[in-house]
Every structure is written in C-alpha cells, then in structure tokens.
Amino acid sequence: MRILFLTFQFPYPPLSGAAIKTLSLLDHLRANHEVHLVSLRRGSPTSAQQEWAANLEGVHTVELNKPRNAWSLLSSYIARVPLRIERNRSGGMARLVEAQLNAVRPHLVFVDGLSMAQYVPEQHRRRSILHEHNAEYLIWQRQSEIESGLRRWVAATEAARLRRYEALAVLQFETLFAVSEDDRQTLIELGAEPSRVGVLPNIPDRALLDMPAPSFSDSPPVILYFGTLSWQPNIESLERILSSILPAVRRRVPEARLIAAGVGASPALAGRVASTEGAQFCGKVEDPEPLYRSARVLVDATRSGGGTRLKVLNAFARGIPVVASSRAAEGLGATPGEHLLVADKEAEFTDAVVSILRDGNRWKALSENARALIRARYVAEIAYRPLDEAVARIAVAGS
Image (cartoon, rainbow, N blue to C red):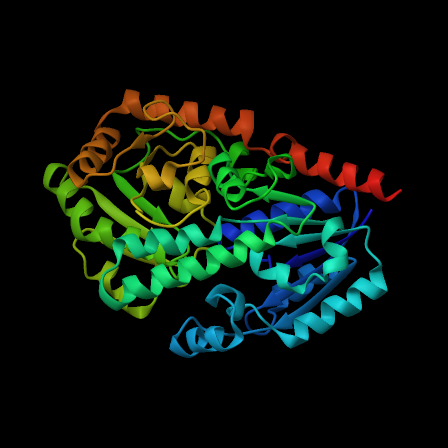
C-alpha cells in the first residue's frame, strides 16, 4: 500500500519519547509498504537528519517554530483552536499535504498525533488512521490539578478547549489508536465507537533487550532520571525528586547520587540540578548505555502527564529496576512489586528507592521480571499487530 505518514515532529534522531514512538511506527510500516513522510520540524535539518532522510523514498518537511507563550495562547483564541493545535498550525503544511495527497494518491493516511488531524481533508478521513500519543486533554486537566492561581485557570480552560476539539476529531476517522487501554477508554468516553479504537503501545528501543543483563554488584548506588526536560510533567517530576526524594534517600544512603539527563532543559533547571548536593546534570545524551550501566534504579515521580512513559519501558528493557508514581506507571500492564515499585507519598517513594539501592535480591527479581514483560508484550511484532490488521482491513475495503 501507499501510505502518507503525517507527523508533528521530525522523528530522527529519536531523542524524545514521542519521537521514539513515531520512528518505530514509521519503520514498522516501511517494512511492508511504500511510505511517504510529511513532517513538521523545529529548526533547520542537521546533516545527520539530511542523511537519514536521503535513505527514504519520500520525505517532505515544513519548518515551524511557535513557542508555548502568551502570544501563542492569544493566537489560539483568535484562531478558535486549542493551544496545541495552534502551535502546530501552518499554511505551508496545509499546502504540502494537499500537494502530496494529489501526487502520491495514497491508499491510506496515517496521522501521527492529534495536532496533525487538522491537515487531513474530510473526504480522506475515512481512509485514515489517527494515532494519539496521549489522550491530549487529560494532560492539561492533570496539570491544572497541581497548579494554582492563574496557571491553574489557564490549564483548566485549555483542558476544556482541547476536550471539545478532541471529541470532534475522534468521530471523524475510520480507525483510532491510543497508547494504552486507559487512554482507549478515554477516547471512547469522548464519543469514539469502541470497535474503531485500538491500542498501539509505546515500545522501548529493541537494542536494549539485546544488551547483557545488568548486575547489582556492578552498579553504583546511582538514581537515574532520564527524559525530555522541556516537557512540563518531566520538569515537575525532576523538581520533586530534587526537593524532597533525593535528600530523604541520601539521609539513609549517604553515598547515593542522582544523575539527571535528557534534552531540552532550561538553564534554570540545569542549574538547579547542578547546585543540588549529590546530583549531577548530563543534558543531551547520544548513547544512553553508559547512563544505564552507571545506574541502579530509575525513578519517575510525576503527578501529571498522560499516555505511557517510554523512559520506564526503556529501563524495563535494559533491566534497570524502576520506582514510579502511580501516574508514571499507568497503562503499562505492569504489576507493582513484580515488575516495578509504585509509590506516591514522599515517604513511600523514599522507602522504595532505598530498598532497591540496598536489596540485591529484590533488585534482581525486578530486573528480570521487567525484561520478561517487555519480551512478552512490548516488541513490535507483537505490539503492532493491531496496526497491521487495521491496514489490511482498509486495503480490503478499498479494493
């Protein structure tokens, strides 16, 4: 089949959780179909991105740089669309999609992300798949629950605007995919027909499963936080770790240290990490293997956000035990105490981290069980079967 793949982010290099998912879906479809990529990008392409794109049959991009600020929020009200949609709205992209629809004449349009749905003409939506990285309005709704004052009002208002937009969008596409059963139920609650909504879970980097199993005795007492540090739920999580969890852990395990890594950190956040006793900031990391080798436990203490956490799945795949909040663990199908430890209150979170830092037997059981879960459920040939079936159904319907 000829597939036109629309995405809100250039997927290479896959430095964020969303980009990792996008690239894995793109690679999976390219294995059996003719795929043409149309993507927004932030900034000029690097030489590595140009080289990657040259190896694909068709890659077309439009540069768009709209920050999340007061002007963008005002512009979204003028345009009468939610902020997320406005930040990904481009006349150039609309023209490019129209041109590619006419030139490629795709059998199927794969829409990667709610913000790209705006570019699909109505007559094409019944032969399109909408893949939602998150139930989008929930991210704003959950953010409003931990904010106060004006920020709380803005987040709650944006959640309501995005909910209305998302509810209309899910009615217009032939097939919808969420990243977890929890998100699937949310889309159904918005009005989507249950038979048209499937699950395409996030999957970790397959290469992590091929690495040798880690060893408790070889790993120092290092706590790892690894994520996209421009995303508000990740910022909130890291700040919580720095302010309360890390100091409490170090009072009981004085040799414990925190390494925080990931792209997009503001100078203020990077400085906050660097100035915290026992913490080290690494920033952008091209090869995560040294990080994993130096860590005994990965933590995610977020109380907001949505979807499922690739940072957790990647740690599972590498065999690094995880302590996560219930929000960070949701949608993974992981059993607390078997695949990871789940805690929400600071004291419980601290106890869980300390137990993994000290207890080699518990550490080994969590490491092995988490890797087994990934092999059983979170590899492409298993996780993406629903996508293959949906593509086949659409192909039959169009023949």
